[in-house]
Picture: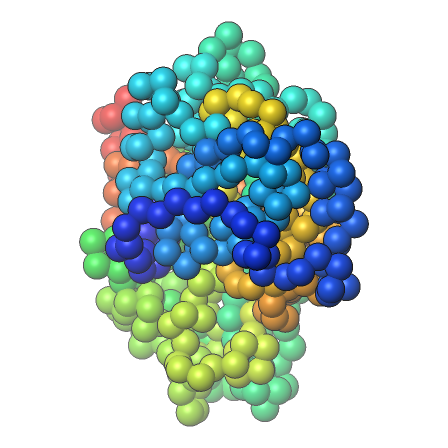
Length: 453
């Protein structure tokens, strides 16, 4: 996935932890921003699990492993279960090996719905039940979307709900410097039409609206795919997006070509981009937002996911020196609501047990989300959490975008075959910015897709 290019993963030895009462990060009942009632009720309902064991395998290592363990400690303290978490640098391959060998963990947590669908089709996952699916639909922002990402065909060919969404990532953001907006008298746009008007106004005022950088070494081009994916969701139905991702809707369909052309209105307009069009493909995505902080600003707007502040100048205070707004929908397409692009991790049962079922129930408690929310790097679409538990205002605002979304879709290129999503789609976007037409680029990508069928 793209995050492999964006994040530094600690090369630490594999660790496994067993929770002890003294390891609780926040003592129950001592801070009103946490829903301790949900913890107490869960604890009372699962007192019969003491002495049981639970093995959990997931993607989190290094700092993220420590954060997840801080949540898991509440489960073990409430139930008396001996719970152990482990991971692997090649966790996608490892879970396939373990399930095929008949030695899976009780719970597997993965960020790839496609991989989980494959495991379900082979009978390696246990359905969580329609009641859990119904709970997600009711309690999560864009609940139908999340249920869809957890529903797969089992070995019997029938659809069932297998994967509980826990921890989300958000991409549909535009970053800016509030002071620059205030000095110029600009307002945050709430529609795509207004975003384009704002871009035109910045040009009229003698400025440059956008910093766009597609450079990423061997992965150059991926930032453009995020643009196209977000625009697909704002020009077409969620079903069209799904059909595009699995190539039922061909890559060179007019709907896809139109989304690429819409991206071109921003990236191929020399008045719109810092450094001119030639700089778009050559600028590294990590350096791209620096223009926001120049004096005078080299640009006023930068579209990128929630991780990008890691590459802002040292000492940048979010919410003060830099802020963001939701990449807005078109007013001309009100029927498409408020779509959001991102990613997330999904918890599944790979070896059924009472403790495994209890763990899924634990994830339905606000406390299981709030403990991580209060630290760092955690977003949730769960509408019943106390948003005051978020560690800062930036995370809180991002969380509110998730809970108010009407549609949520995983990053499209991550769901496509690797030769497309991490191949011809990336290079095609570079060719597009370099001068090729949207139709020619789309035809080429479709040709590469046809070649692997």
